[in-house]
Length: 222
Ligand SMILES: C[S@@+](CC[C@H](N)C(=O)[O-])C[C@H]1O[C@@H](n2cnc3c(N)ncnc32)[C@H](O)[C@@H]1O
Image (cartoon, rainbow, N blue to C red; front, side, top):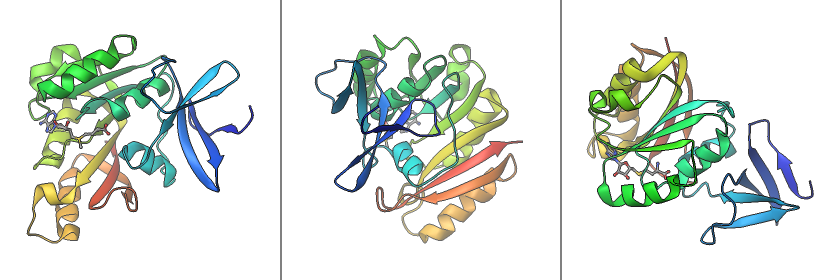
């Protein structure tokens, strides 16, 4: 394929443009006019912007996470579906359960999920996983980007219900949403300490320069 290179990750590609590396996923639903895409032969690739997606940022920063084409993912804080749609491109043979509590964002999420048969939108509050227990199966990954206090608590409760043993949590900690007075280092340390009772911490990734005041925690369920 000209210009486009397969990464070591399922359905994720890179493209070199003016000396910088651009990330993309192969479109599961080609022909959406509002998206930035590149067409090579009869295949369409959607540009995946690390400034708009923390998952794209950690992949560009070299995280070892590897979501596979048959993975199941519980995505907490799906918003209007920017990142979720790329996860749906990746897990072609799997499923993404996308939880979001804003009815306005859910409207967009439902719209993008209609042609994406592997994407299940769920209008619910991630703090109360019992409320969507009947809609979600066991998953290989939990991706959490909810910008809430109690982020570790939300992750622990969801993981205890849905994450497989040895499954991976990818948690985006927005340091200032937890405590605006404590120093960011202190905040991250106390959230990570709470996680350590349930998970082995695998990686900590600072999201600079793409997202300030954010750290990604990759942790494996024991
Ligand atoms: C930073 S945005 C997520 C961006 C999205 N992950 C992306 O990359 O496209 C955080 C989202 O989490 C949602 N959210 C916050 N608290 C939540 C909760 N308790 N349950 C479900 N969604 C929540 C917000 O409504 C918002 O849409």
